[in-house]
Every structure is written in structure tokens, then in C-alpha cells.
Amino acid sequence: MNTVRRLTPLDRIIDQGQRALETVFGNPPAARPNPAAGLPEVELDDSERRHAAGLMRINHVGEVCAQALYLGQAAVARSEETREHLLHAAQEETDHLAWCADRLRELDSRPSVFNPLWYAGSYAIGTAAGLRGDGWNLGFVVETERQVEAHIDEHLDHLPPADSRSRAILEVMKADEARHADNAEAAGARVLPFPIPWVMAMASKVMKAVAYRV
Ligand SMILES: [Fe+2]
Ligand SMILES: [Fe+2]
Image (cartoon, rainbow, N blue to C red; front, side, top):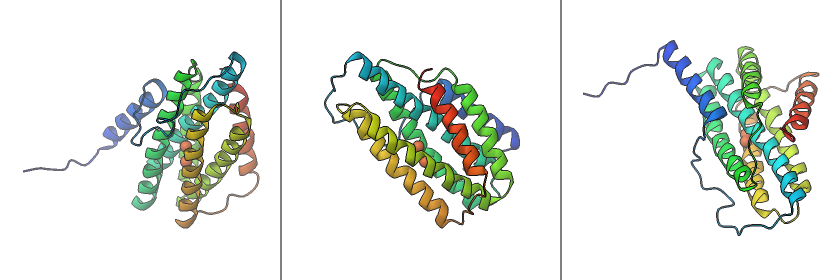
């Protein structure tokens, strides 16, 4: 007879720890094919390649943060529905993470050395948002995803024109992030009051400036 074992708090902590290590040091697999898979290799000169790698490293850090935020938020979500909502979005963020990592390798570059810090900080922020209740939790998703969508748009403008492979990945990510925000809005997100969106934008500005380089 099959029995389903309920997760104990210790199981949950171990599971969260494993996911953190996989995100930061491992290479979690994507569930969907890489959007750039069928595209031809692109020719970039050295400065274009470095610039594209800087932008894709920012996007990779963004996805490390997204994993941590969503898992932190899910860990303290009040309703099972909100938890499911967050974990489903986190799965799509894993695809983004894997695609950005693939592209960084193709560009002969690597993820940010500060990923453990980005992860820890984002997990703490996600947990803090989640503890305020599910309306806040979902509101935080909406604000994060809208800001990410805007920065992906900027990157689409600033990537080297020839870099169709990075662009293909970002186009799909942008559509996913917009859907994550719409779904969270529909699920009852509350609008975050000033200065929270502003503080979030400033924090991501710092992250982008650092991650472009290391
Ligand atoms: Fe994402
Ligand atoms: Fe997202």
C-alpha cells in the first residue's frame, strides 16, 4: 500500500536548503526547451560579447533572486492556494534561470560571484513580504514582475543587434513575467504603498550595476 508522508518542518528546511544550493551552485534543469535552441550561432566581436554577457548575467541574477523570493514567500504563505501559485511561478523561473545560464556559457562567461548573497537577501525579503499576509505577498509579486518586465525591455533595446539568441530567451521571459504579474493581480494582490516600490527599484539598480561586472 502506498502511503503519502507529510513533510515535517525539518523536511521543509532540508528541501529549501537543497533548492538554494542547486540554484546558487548547481544547474537546475529547465522543463521547457530553450527558446534559442533552433537559432543559428551569432557572430559577436569581443566588446559585444562582453556587453551581452554583462546583460545576461544581470538577468541570471534576477532569476536567482526570483527563485529565492518565491520560495521565501511560499514558505510563509497563509493559504495553500497562494503557496501553489508561488511555487508554479517558481518553476517557470527555473526555466529562465537555466536558459540564462546556457546563454552565459555560450558567451564564454559565468554567473555572478555574489549569487549566494543575492539569494540570501532575496529569500529574507520574500519571507518578510510573505509574513505580512497573502495580499501583500501577491502585491510583492506584481511589483517585482512589473519591474523585471521593464528591465527586460531595456535589455532588449541594449543587446548587440546581432544577438538573436539572447533576444529569443528574453522575449519568452518577458511574456512569462507579465503573466506572473497578471495572475498575482487576479489572485488578489494589494497595491504596495510608497516607498516600497521605490526601495525595490533602488535595490535592483544596485544589483544590476554590480552584476553587469561580476
Ligand atoms: Fe523570470
Ligand atoms: Fe516571473
